[in-house]
Amino acid sequence: MISQTDRRGFLGGALATSALLMATRSRALAIAFDQARHLAPVKVSRDRVIREVVGLRPYRPEGFRVEAERVGNKLLVHNYGHGGAGITLSWGTAALALDLTRDFLIGRPTSAGAVAPSSGAVRSIPSAVADGSRRLSTRPLHFAVLGCGVNGLSTARLLQRQFGGTVTIYAKDLPPETTSNIAGGFWSPTSVFDDTVVTTKFTEQFRLACRISNRAFQNLVGPDYGVRWIDTFDLLRDETSLARQLTGGDDLYPAREIHRDPDHYFGFPYVKQFSTMLIEPPVYLNALLRDFYIAGGKLVVKEFRSREEINRLPAQVIFNCTGLGAKALFDDQQLEPVRGQLEVLLPQPEIDYCYLGGGEYMFPRHDGIVLGGTWGHGDWSLTPKPEQTTSILQSHAEIMKGLKS
Ligand SMILES: Cc1cc2nc3c(=O)[nH]c(=O)nc-3n(C[C@H](O)[C@H](O)[C@H](O)COP(=O)(O)OP(=O)(O)OC[C@H]3O[C@@H](n4cnc5c(N)ncnc54)[C@H](O)[C@@H]3O)c2cc1C
Image: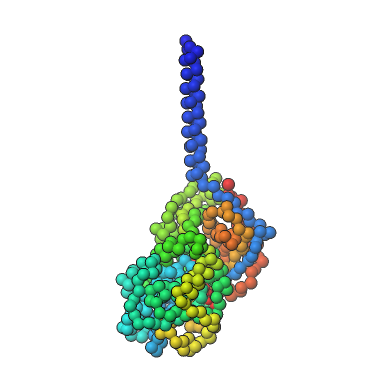
């Protein structure tokens, strides 16, 4: 028989136990909720489009051209043709381009033609990108950089940091009027080359450029440069795609996870989640331009129409970062435009993730939600195409239908 006091004690104990059970259950629920990360929906509709933009990716099937050539007593270093990843690769190819000047700068130019990079020297560059403290001791030099997109600006900044001297950028268009300003700004070295035609030498340059650039962008994370880490969801229908490495190598993308849970991830059977960086081109390019001026850089607005005009520049070393402009200027038959149209929706600060859905992509920038993507090989048209507007909006609305918030 249970006495009155015992009963109270029993009831109290039972209540405490059930409270404990409830607390444990709600903790378990909270953990389950955390695991199925909340994904706010993108409001895809025509009346939320704030602008449409079109840009031409400077694509070469053989990959970007980072190569040096002697022109009389000058050195001309090419750094162009970055396809769909000019922002992503910018610090990396700038570092490779600078490396090609070393022999010339220390007064031991090789015979005419390409100057071979020394892999040891290349490997010393990432730390220079990171802290700007390494400089070659050379006589004062005048460098010219052709082009003021992301590649011209990164090359110019790296020159200032490593070599000092005077750096002058010559360009027809300045930010915000460059292709670099159109870019989505997602850090991923995609759509850069055709892997059936690339050489081993290029593959090595590409691998190095990815790593150097990734590291350099990490040092720029923050609102000043408009760079941040962001969770990304690669939406896949085919299980075999899960085994494929992310472009540039899995090790460049932290926090990788695989989901086989269509109830929580856009309704896709397979989803690869990872972290990468999102770069806001308007903020980033202005910050580079500001740094370039602060370091004493000069800028001349000028369009070049021939190689002879370029050869007449006073600089001893000239970097060609003219993007698609190099096709006409240097008669590069490989270079072709790959047209991309973007629909930009009103900003939604609650969207804190990107997704890639086969051809489509969504990047939540502060200046708008960027929806892509189209790839028009050989298409020079810079006018938005209404049928592409419709198909971009429809395909993203379809992806959002699968999102269980
Ligand atoms: C829709 C779209 C989305 C993209 N998304 C991404 C992305 O998410 N991530 C990413 O990394 N990349 C992305 N890209 C690719 C990226 O935009 C390009 O690879 C990059 O902008 C190339 O930069 P650049 O400096 O070489 O060329 P540009 O930005 O085109 O700059 C070239 C410079 O050279 C100058 N120039 C050219 N010809 C001459 C001449 N004859 N005389 C004088 N000056 C000249 C121009 O005026 C300009 O200043 C995207 C591109 C597009 C179109």
